[in-house]
Length: 148
Image 1 (cartoon, rainbow, N blue to C red):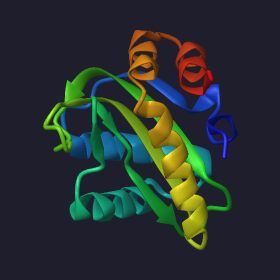
Image 2 (cartoon, rainbow, N blue to C red):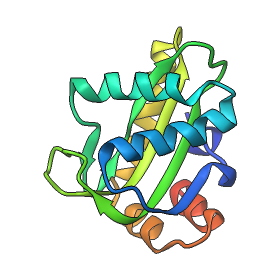
Image 3 (cartoon, rainbow, N blue to C red):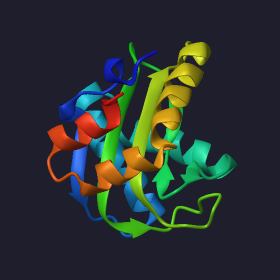
């Protein structure tokens, strides 16, 4: 799976200003609802249920909130670059300023794991994270994420 199959420049948000993990999840849920047609409260509920199992903060200032979602036909990915880092209870204890929401069809467990692995591999690279942080426009951030 190639990351450019999962995300487009229209799915990149910049300069967001949430002040907590819960606000991050609510904000991502609202944006995802507008793109998927699935109600924001439904998305927020599955994300918060997943987060209750353990933080999706993978370290290096990155979190990958993710969940399978009933009613979704294809994977949906949304990348957000925050104006200020927030505490996300990440594994390394560092605050998070890059969020990548990954929603997949409920029936596609393999698809869910493939999408998660694809995004995680890209965001584990320090040069990709730094290019995303430097980016100001969605097109720049998208290019930084998808560049090989």
